[in-house]
Image (cartoon, rainbow, N blue to C red):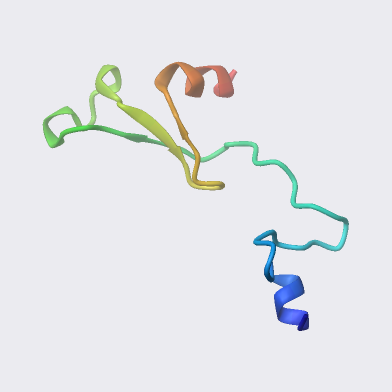
Length: 68
């Protein structure tokens, strides 16, 4: 395996770090997503939240729990 494959995930899909596996995401960059353009900007109409750090999606209730 080449050095680039080892650094950037190679065949197993996980990025290597010097200290072992990558740290767990803290979900600090949650972005609201709405189902329709008419709902955009309305906090009570958020369909889900998207974490820009890891790409996971969370329901509004899950996002509220993460923020606490």
